[in-house]
Length: 579
Image 1 (spheres, rainbow, N blue to C red):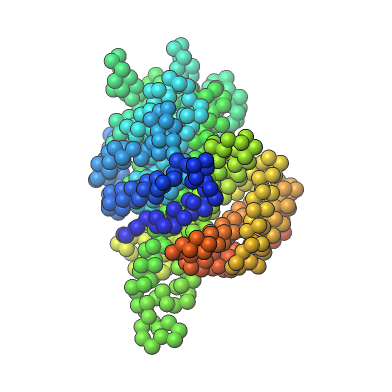
Image 2 (cartoon, helix red, strand yellow):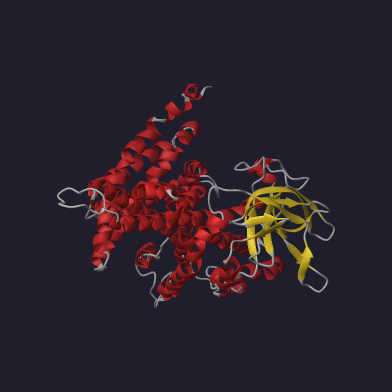
């Protein structure tokens, strides 16, 4: 399976999201000037193409294996992780105080896309580390940072996120893992966690588990959850981490995809309890974990972009070579890319991928500005924008991954259904992205119940105003853009006043509507920028923008009607479900 990092497209999307003047001496991204961004992405691409990509099918075929509490990763993965660590890739966005490079989230987004396109099952391990770094930077005590954060930043140790339990998935209020206070100020954990990515493996000598648990006197529900750090190994009398903690892997799941990534069941407290240390304050763990979750949700959106990009590359390559039938006007057998229906599928894939990338990079840029803007008002507005866009970036991009990998199989035809061609693996790998780190339905609920109302709705107003401005100045597909943006405005006005059941019934179509309007306007904005800069890809960007606006975003009015008028048919039609 081939993959070449689309560096031109990534750099262009990165600069578009950064904004005018951001790379200048006094700009928000001045540390990416003088070719730093381009050079870093080129090196990330080299590592992805030369090291990670050759291991992707091996990971799928062999998978991670479990025996007697130990997990062995596929052949070549330990060596690849050693190269990852030596390359300093884990430290890109981490703070300098703990060994990081403190480079922007936007740059890390580009790298994350590249690595996941080459080998998602491998890249999901450091992806979790990035989230743990952010959570610990924000909430952990200095002693914990000195001992554990430095090791995670360097990549010497890896990290996990332990939320889900057999009876508590999306509803963490049902969580039963308990924590008990110890006399020395530490805690002891007892319970079971499931679906823990890289909970056990052989890539690193220690694993730092971030675990949600409940103290005996904690309030009920999510208000009584605390966040703890429980390492696989504890320090011995000499300070070396050789003493095994009371935590173990009881087995790994047999999954549809990402076979190389071990998904573990973790047991805490077989004996005296797993030694753990509080992160943040007691009963405030959910807020700490959501720092990590928001990072992870954008990263999962980037996984969606990555798989969509790779599927598109594979389908385009096959369609250019495969000959079947005669295209309109042809006198001999044509490559299938010449057939209008195949061209439509390929354009759908390419333009949807570009739209998803643009939304994800805009989200990363908003995260950066929330931290980097010197003006408090601009920083606050950027934080509100990042919060608004995060569920859209996660859900839309992962939906696009599922749709695009399915279309890739369709372009390949019968050969796509054969495992040897590799596109079936992409579809299997992509399926989890719409489920983990908060299902896409939960992202939609978050968007309509919290995010569009955040800051008294000011962030939503600013976003729609920006879309209207782009549509008003558009050189292509102006009417299609205007219709999609106004459909979003109408649906938004309805939802901000709707009662809860109606809002929830329209949540999923609303998120898709938001993404179509935002994606279309960003593509048109990019096409105009490319034309003004005489970019070598200007004609391609304009064609993709026009296709997306006139063939995909054109669904916006219908989605708005579903949001506004369709709720009753959801909430009053349970007879159709056998109730």
